[in-house]
Image (tube, rainbow, N blue to C red; front, side):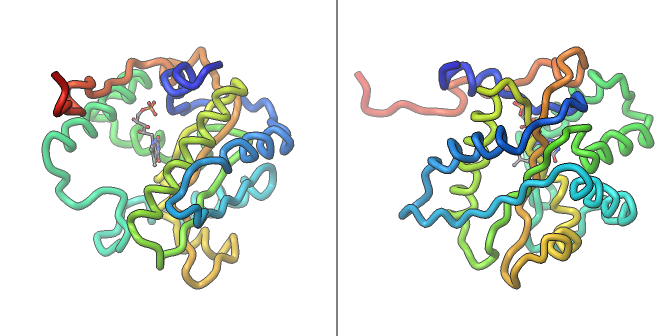
Length: 224
Ligand SMILES: Cc1cc2nc3c(=O)[nH]c(=O)nc-3n(C[C@H](O)[C@H](O)[C@H](O)COP(=O)(O)O)c2cc1C
């Protein structure tokens, strides 16, 4: 698989087969992803990989702390700013509409939609979960650099015919995860990632995704 194919084929997988994935495969993926760039090569990175009973314990925690599902207004690291503006807001709604259409969950069925959101906390059935940890003292730059590591993990997984879903949904449980992982004073989970074998028969793993065109996202200056 070449890089272009890996980038285009990767999509967020929201329904996995229970087929186990060996630790050695994840180690191999991380051994590639660690070559991601970071400013001044500081590699302010930490990844916690969980499987089996450890993973179940985390899902159980989320199930029990269910009330935390609503984002807190005072979260100093919100996933989205309050009152997301256009056109970003509409894009966010479009993704939700496309995804729930694939899941055949109508807008009025709030309970079913919430149930799907809660599937995040079962890692959509994936056998492996990764948590990306960041030090709060770092600046915005380093958050972006961590993103390069995360995408590199997703692409290396793709190359091995595995699927992934990045999961900022885990931001709702940062304090609980810090306890479970015994994180240091300044550390917090930025986001999670489910990894496993995709169930490619499921429409939720098949719906068409949208992207800006090159002309919408880039401008070319100084070319003749
Ligand atoms: C950092 C990050 C966090 C994300 N968190 C979630 C999440 O919690 N749950 C989810 O279902 N999708 C999550 N996504 C997936 C996005 O919705 C998805 O990347 C976007 O809709 C584009 O679709 P694609 O990944 O299938 O190309 C996340 C993506 C990124 C980059």
